[in-house]
Image 1 (cartoon, helix red, strand yellow):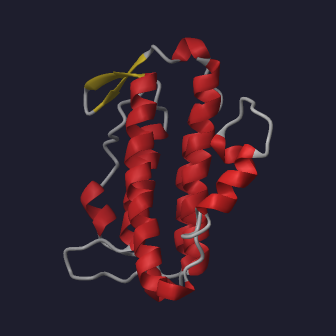
Image 2 (cartoon, rainbow, N blue to C red):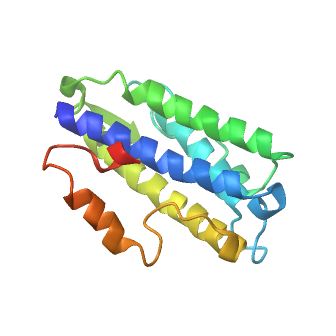
Length: 183
């Protein structure tokens, strides 16, 4: 289970890095672009993720993950005035998450915590949030790629480069490593 904790921290770091790399490619106008009034911009998705992170990970072992102070509906109204403000909020959410999970020990993983009074083991809660954040970061990356078009800098294996990528991987000795170690 120690490898689970190390691996899940690396997964969260990986997904955060995809968001970071996307924001660097976008202007504030692009970050705030919405295809229509009911759609979410990158900015709104970030605001929602940050609200979720702060609610879920603040005192997560001892308090319900849906905090009374959270205003989830407000998360879907863009209120960022600058890219710097948005990135600072993003960093604050991730800081809260890592502060909560990095000190965990194997014996913590079967503890029961609550989200909206629904009991989860710590492992289930971590998996729930990892999937939730991956879902939203996929949306962020997709919107970034859509907005940048041909100017988009790939965050994974660029089209047409799979053979070279695999050749590089297969030229290395077999060994236990996390897929993010080479990124």
